[in-house]
Length: 318
Image (cartoon, rainbow, N blue to C red; front, side, top):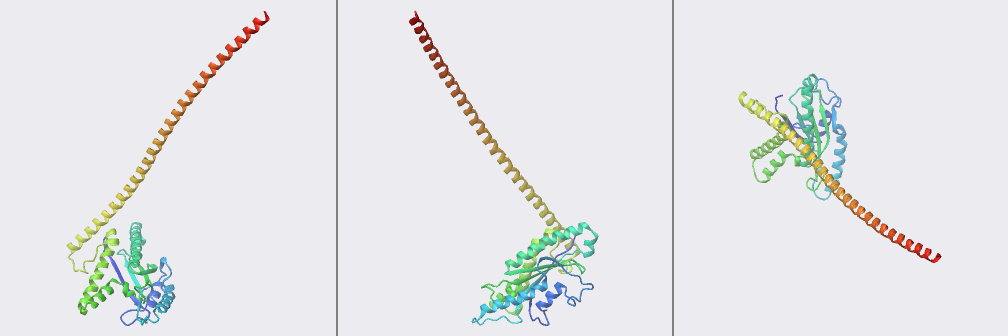
C-alpha cells in the first residue's frame, strides 16, 4: 500500500468567528448532531474509540472555565469568549472506506495504523498539556479518519485554559513575537514548529506503516522523487516490523534463558539435596552400625555374665 500522511491540529474558542468555527460547532459535527455535518452526503453516527461522545465535552468545558475563573479572581486575567479552549486533531488514512469493506488485508492495515495513531495522539496531547476526552472515527466520508478532541489541563502554567498555549505553532509564534520578531518571522516560526510536529507524526505513526511524509503535489515532487520516497517509507516500515520481530524473539529468548536459569538452579538444589541425603544416609548407617556393635558387645557381656551365674549356681548345688 502506498500513500502519504494527513494530520492536523487546530484550536477553537467558544464564540468562534468568521475565520474559525466555534468549539460547540466542532463538537456537534464530530458527534454528527442533526444538521451539523451538511458537507457529508449521508451522515452516520461516529464510532466512539476513546472517552466520551464529543457533544458531552461542551458542559465539561463550561465547568472547567468556571473553575478557572474562580482561580483568576484578583489576578487581572480573564477567560473571554474568544479564548481558545478546545483542540481538535484529525488523522486520516489514504485507504478509502470502500477499500476497507472490500479487502480484509486493507482493513487489517488500517486497524494497525489506527491503533498507533490513537496511542500517539493521546500521548502527544498529554505532553503538550492537554487532556484527551474523546476519540471518534468517521466512516461516512471517502477516507476513514479519526478526530481527537482535547481540552487544556488547568494548572499554574495555563491558568486561563488557553489551548493556544498547548499548540506548537502558536507557542513558537508567540515566542518569536516576544523576542521582537515581525509578523513574517512569526509566521515562519509557526510553520517550522508545525513541520516539526508533522515530522513527529511521521516518525511515530506514518513511517511505521509505510506512508510517506508528504504527497507529490504538496511539495511538487517529481514522480521519481515521490516513488523513491514511497520506497524509503516501505523500507522503514519493513525495518520497523523486523525490529518488532527481533524484540519479540529477544523477549522469548530472555524468557527461555530465565527458564533455563531456573532449571539450572533447581538442578543445583537437587544435587545439593542428593548430597545431603547421601551424607545423612551414610551417617545413619554408621550410627546404626555403631549401635549394633555396642548392642552385640553388651549382649555378649550379658551372656557371659549369665554363664558365670549359671556355673556358680551349679557349683553351689554340688
